Image 1 (tube, helix red, strand yellow):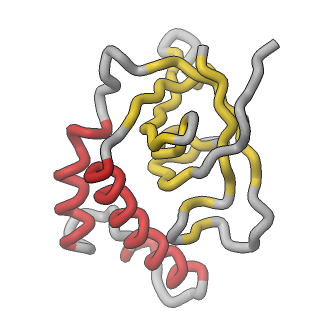
Image 2 (cartoon, rainbow, N blue to C red):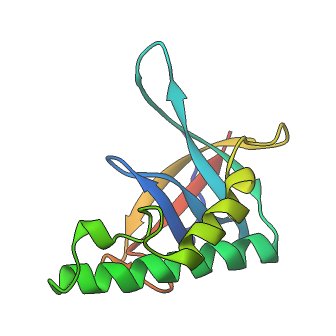
Length: 144
């Protein structure tokens, strides 16, 4: 039986499909990038992640892009913006585009020193799904 650590802060959610698939969260109290592992043969997610530490500069860039997304999402949820204005659409938000270029090589591939882990998602008790501080959940980790 796996033992999971305490719930830890999730700074950024880069991908979600039936659960968090990529982002940055604390693992043992330190910011780590996490990426869900994919089973090519089974054509599904494995339930495990690769995790590796990120530096302060990388985290800062990710958080800046996250704040741009959260601002857009607030407008979208209020009915004041459409999906056509999503900052991830190229040319919609110049700073987003610049951050995407800076972050592209940092997001993939996972370094050889990455650890495999399992995670449990722990919902936070709040109304907003997305906030500048991060998404509405924490993650508990079990390094494999």
